[in-house]
Amino acid sequence: MTNQFELRLSGAGGQGLLLAGIVLAEAGILDDKFATQTQSYGPEARGGASKSEVIISDSEIDYPEVRTPNLTLALTQEAADKYISKDIMNGIIVVDERVKINPAIKYEKLISVPIMKTAKNKVGKAIVANIVSLGIIVEATNVVSKEAMESAILNRVPKGTEKLNKMALESGYELAK
Amino acid sequence: MKMKMKSNVQFVQGNKACILGALDAGYKFYGGYPITPSTELAELSAVELPKVGGKFIQMEDEIAGIAAAIGASLTGKKSMTATSGPGFSLKQENIGYAMMAEIPLVIVNVQRGGPSTGLPTSPAQGDMMQAKWGTHGDHPVIALTPESVQETYYMTIRAFNLAEKYRMPVMLMTDEVIGHMREKIVIPNKEDIEIIDRVQPNEKEGYLPYGVKDGETVPKMASFGDGYRYHVTGLAHDETGFPSNSNENAKRLLDRLMNKVNHNLDDILDYEEYMLEDAEHIVLSYGATARSARAAIKQMRQEGIKAGMFRLKTVWPFPEERLLELSKNVKNVLVAEMNLGQMVLEVERVVKDNAKILFCGRADGEIITPEEIVETLKEEF
Image (tube, rainbow over all chains, first blue to last red; front, top):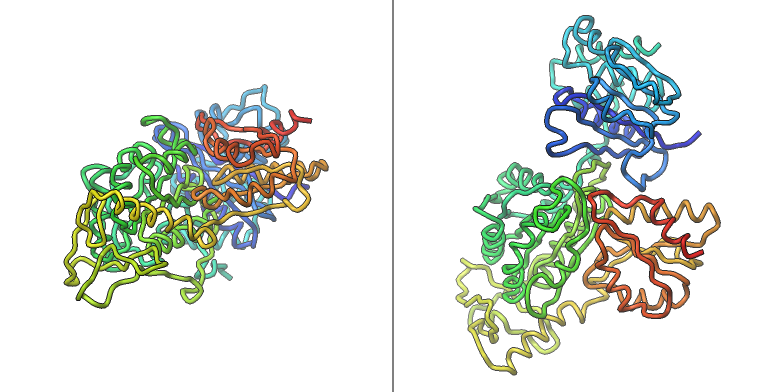
């Protein structure tokens, strides 16, 4: 098994995927791993589809960009169409249940679950879809420890939203089981 | 139990690491005009400088930005301006002015695709020769190229130190990849950071603002407002700072300016030798591209190809003596850079026929991949 794990988190601008990428990388650092995070900029990042990419590794990361993601998340159809390409090969795909995957794409595993619905109805706020997604990713891959992920989230989210975010994370774990 | 990063550990963008390093070096003034991908440098300066008694001014354009930074430096404040290619072009005249008037200054260029406004959000390393020759006339240049967020922190401190020590503008030539990517950095203890401040005069009587004792290259610098009266000009000048057309004087001045760098190479030059001990092939690279080169070398070593990297940490001055020495023992010197051939010219000048010179470059807004470097070398086998 390779010691480097590459993730591409995509969705619409404003869905908090930049924060999700930072939190995931910081969880990696809490686990004493190396991590880099990059994101799309400029017109590409305004509205429409945007992405945040994370590499987590046991050793120093040289080439810093994600090329063959081990996991790709897409919260919207537009993001899926743009960022889930054939370079995914044997990776894991995580999408909201409403997103359709091009049948030509080969993948190791597809996790298609009601991310948006869970955030909105079960947890209570659509804005935590990013944290629900992180729960799914951690449960499905163990790329970081649950303890580190929970800590990284609590270190970043605004005061007063800890409970909400913790619930979102746990709902994510449930969705991936 | 909630886990926390140690208080001296942060996960930040290269641009933020630059500001953290600047502040630890004693940075007090920003004059500039924001431009992608350097904008965070202006934003963070605006937030952080007032907290340390510093000042941030967004000027009407890049020319005025560097001019304000030059003025602030003359008052004794450590100053910086930050920009990207289009702004770097505009600043060239005042870069020459700061060289000639010997004003400490840090200029950060977060390089993006060019020419002109080019590719605002994509990386490039296309301003390397401009750093050296962008402003007219012969002049010394110090330009540093970090390959990581952590190194951006340290190199920014070094840029301020060199600027203060040698009384000259120093360029930090980073790129969009290093500026925008986030990585972990560890902030060292304050006691472990060497900070250099310009040498100031302590005797007003007979103060010669551009006078040095025999064997010295850097004059003592009085701060505006401290009661020293002197003239600052871009014209050739004598020890008093007043213009002089004397050929003898012009030669003395220019020799001294050049010697600030040429006679202090041991102090200024910085490079990394990675897996070069037994190397048959040198990959010469710098900045973000050096990360691809390192990945390429690891991959080639696994295949039994003896490759190593010579990484420029100072692109200017160029470490020519060391490269010449190394090139005598290898078959190929491959230059990898995000442009269509700039530092490779310097490599050709130095290496000559000692080794075959190969080039791997691109300027389409994408970082060179490790595979491209490997392929360029393998074409020789």
